[in-house]
Image 1: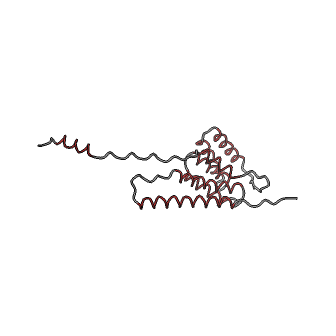
Image 2: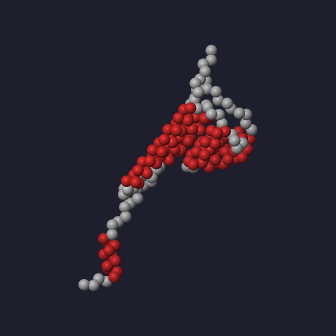
Image 3: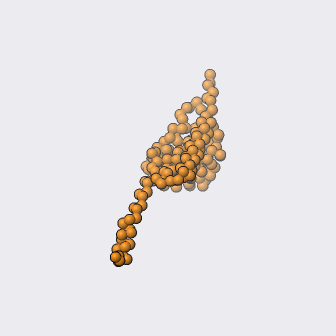
Length: 193
């Protein structure tokens, strides 16, 4: 018996297995705003700790204030623009770099946030609240990366599983490193008589 060619193809198509649906992309359990709140919490509120605040150019302060107002209004783009202008005036100010890193997180630009926070740490004080904020920013970026790591596909080889496990372990170690660097920013408070 001879099958017409189109019917033959149709019969073959029915035998083919349907493709497996792709797993949904992993979602970060924390919002960018929650991550920024965690960064602020890491600064602490011990008023006995020394925190050096440099004198600032009034124009830079105006831009920082405009950025803060934009953040409160939920306009991360306007906040980023204002802080970018401030960084043109003071490109090595750790506080402005830190604020821009936080806005980068709000914009979903985690790589930029990491770069800005580490640059701020290099330029700033190696202790105190701002130092803790720099390293908490790095920690939050790394936690985000772990949270959105692609899951292991349903059909995987033992090598795939080993690589996936190794990547997760590397990320966990990087998070622990950022935590220890953050904690190293705290110095014992000297009690005054």
